[in-house]
Image (cartoon, rainbow, N blue to C red; front, side):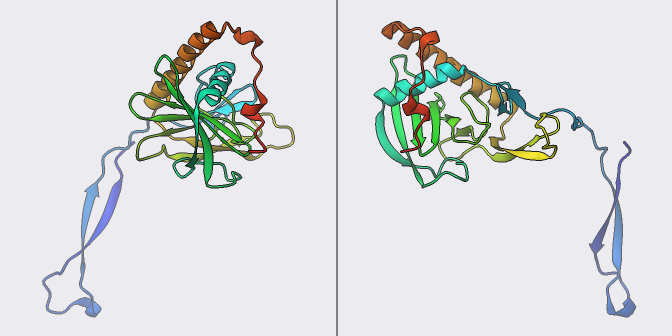
Amino acid sequence: MLGRTLLVALLGCLVSTQPAHGFEALQLEIIQLPDVRVLGKIDKNVRQYKIKDGKRFVTNPYGSAKAILFIAEETKKYGSASKVSTRKFKMPSNYVGSSIMQYQHTFPNGHKFSLFQGKNFTALGYYAKDGHLVFDVLNGGGAFSAPRLWGPYDQLIGRNYRSHMELLMGDGKLDGMGFMKASYSIGYSPVLTEEDFTRYGQLYNSAVKSTLNILLKQNDINLDNYVVSKSILDNSNI
């Protein structure tokens, strides 16, 4: 692509004893802009998200849903309870209230988790060693949210900031949603670099697996026989 040419009008006074029509003349300068490099094109026939088990993710999902739910239940069982503000979280528009219950617990391997529960909403939080909170919405983030990162309303939260969130839209035609051919709302998703998606996704998955292995050995439990407690996902009466 050849460089573009931009005409920039710079106000200046020309030496003249008789300004035309009372206005000062304009001095024009031609500036040659550098070539524009095209890094890639968006293919409208390719989804900008992944579909796994009917749910939506902006990356390939990190973690095992069953393992995450098991850790969530153990966190609530042994965690210290408190009520915290939802101000630092990006909550779904239908969430009622400005606070949420938090159950925080540090497991024997040193990994710290928090279960956040409000009416019709549950999220598991993992505290990375660098101080970031990985926020995995388990339910309540819309029809397409589910355990595992990175789906609707999953977030990365620092000490003084939260990851930027943008509304993710789905393509009804590409997704084969019957008569609905137009775009539809999936929910707000985090805007992170590929490095951060990968790094914190792997840290979360590793912490869940490590903690799970310890708990299964301690309690002589087979995860295949584990049934998710209603107290984790059926919280409509909170």
